[in-house]
Amino acid sequence: MAVTIRDVAALAGVSPSTVSRTCKNNPAISEETKEKVRIAMATLGYEPNFQASSLATQNSRTIGVVLPVSERFQNVDSFFLETIRGINKYCNGHQYTTTLITGDTDEEALQVIKSMVRSGQTESFILLYSKQKDPITDYLYNEGLLFALIGKAYQSANQTIYVDTDNIQAGQDATEYLYQLGHRRIGFIGYERTLLFSSDRKYGWQLAHFSHDLPLDPSLFIEIKGTSKDMPDELYRLLNLPDRPTAFVVTDDFLGVSLERACRQCGLTVPDDVSILSFNNSLFAQMATPPLTSIDVNAAGLGTEAARQIINHLENPNLAATKIIVPHILVEQESCGKAES
Image (cartoon, rainbow, N blue to C red):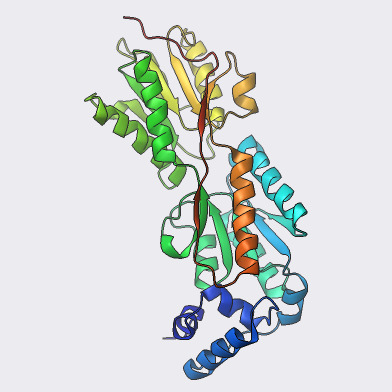
C-alpha cells in the first residue's frame, strides 16, 4: 500500500496540513518541525510533489471558498451571500484574499480545486456546506490540506475544523415555539438527508415531539431534492387532508416562501390556517407574504468564525482542530399564529 501524507504526519507527530506545508516549504512552519517531517518522509519513503512549492509560498495568503454545487444553493439562497460577506470582511482585515470556487457538479468543482492546489494558487479552503459522501471533503482530508467546514463534520470530526449552528437545538426550539402556540400536528419540510444541517433540524423536530409525547406520523416529514424548484405532490395531498398539519417547521426561508405559495394554491391562509416557521431570517423571510417567523443562524457570523479559524490554523500550524458553535435566535414575524382550540 502506498505511503500517504497521513502516515508521515503520524510518524512525525504533526498534523497532515503541517506535512503538506512542509512539502511546499511554507515559512509558517519552523525549521525544527520541517526537519521532523523530512526525517519521517525519508523513513517511510514518501515522495512529495514539489512542483508547486515556490508558487504555494507566494500564494499562501489566499483562501479558497467552495460553494455547494446545487443550482438552487448557488443562485438563490442569500445565506451564502451573507456567509461570504463575513468571510471576506474578516480576511480583508487580516491581509488575506479569497477566491470563489464552484461548479455544476462535484467532479467539476473538484477538478478546479485540484488545479489550484497543483499550481500553488492556494493551500487552504472554507467549504460553505457539509454533506455525506462528499468527494471534495474526502480529497482535502486525504491530501492533508487545511480546510474548514461551515456545518458539522460527518466523518473524522476530531480532525476537522468546523463552524456550525446547533441545528438540533434550533430544530427543537422551532418546534417548541409552535407547540407553545397550541399546535399539536406539526409538519417538517427539509432537504435530502445527505445535507447534515437539514437532517439535524429534523432530528430536533423529532426530539420536541418525543418530549411532549406527540405521535410522529411519517407523512408529516417531506423531503425536497436540493435542485427542486417545486413542492412535491405529497405536500399538496397533505395540505388537502381534513387533519392536515396546523403548522410546519421548514428548513430554510426559500422553502418557507414556497410553502406559503402552496398554501395559497390550496385555499389556505398563513397563519390563520397554517403557521410556518423557517430558518435563516434572510431577505426571503422579510419579503414573504406574510413575513416569515424564522430562526436567525447568523450567517455572517458563521463566515467570520470560519475565516478566523482558518487563518489561526495557517499562522499556528500545530493547533488542534477546533469546533465553534455560533448562537441562533428566533425572530418573530407574522407567519405563526395560535392554533384553534
